[in-house]
Length: 154
Image (cartoon, rainbow, N blue to C red; front, side):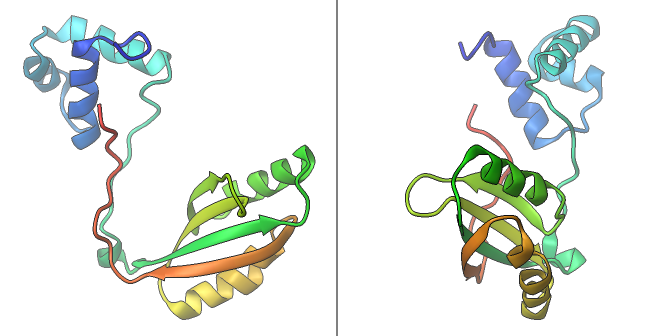
């Protein structure tokens, strides 16, 4: 078992992470429970913080935000205040769709979603370079998406 989750919890989570629009009745039928125990399980998983929200997965091409810039960031300083200031600022930028604190020679890796190279240039000059403590940015662009999922291997 994974951190207090049983096989039925994992089955529910696998189903929900592939389609969060199941009705409680349909979800209950899929995992072999009646409505009330299914709902109780679902509420428990939310209360535990296992289920943290629901979101629609949008096709980037259909909305014109299909350029992914992968940015490796090195900060000028590495004390707790510098890290916290950078991380707080990153949260407020919608173009940054993922931010990972890293080991090794880079401090952070960002995935930045933009509409074009020109859009990235504007973001780079007006926002990215102005983030607190940024000393160096190395950017690579993804020319295609081979795999993208939000589903965890449960």
